[in-house]
Length: 92
Image 1 (cartoon, helix red, strand yellow):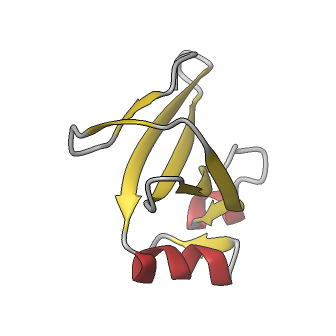
Image 2: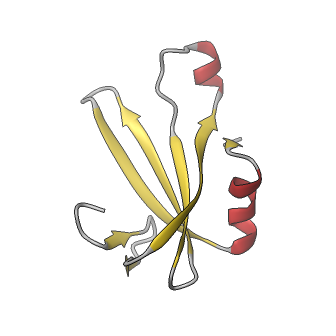
């Protein structure tokens, strides 16, 4: 969010988010994590906004420059249900 209430989704839409509720957090399970347990997994959070939208926040650790990359995506209620039902999401 870069210290503002504006976020930009992966498809380029910009939203102003004043209030939101965090509904779920978890990790994306992958084969790499099972093979190398010191690897930092990608994480997600699902938010529900006052404008009745579900937002998926995905954070990836970049070991090459020791930074975090965060992206946002608007989800439908059906898409959000996969994350809400199980806080360990399989990306395959």
